[in-house]
Image (cartoon, rainbow, N blue to C red):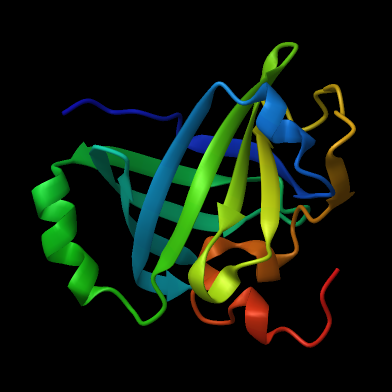
Length: 165
């Protein structure tokens, strides 16, 4: 199984203010994921994305929350299904929509279960100061707000927040 991603992930994260993105979607995939470790300096995630599965290790984010170390390997779905029960409490379920806007792909996650009602868009960048088009459905930026990290949503689900943005 091949190495999949660069060692430094640069992304920005936004709330989504309408369902208009669904009209532009070219891909839709159900995702189930759990965390073997949610330490603030490192997370270890097991993800089943459609008919594929991945083991991912992420490091601590930089001060702005835009970049961090990421290592990811594809594993078999059977291996992932074996590891999910070992994960910490709070399995994340979501549907990911992918939308191309000019030269960038936005991944829009519509959360289910304990995080229902939360819709977040991420865009991966090549450089931290890279410019990109902001489609009309893109709302408030939440880059660096750890409440929106999946590892935190597994522990503090969106439906339990008192102050929602």
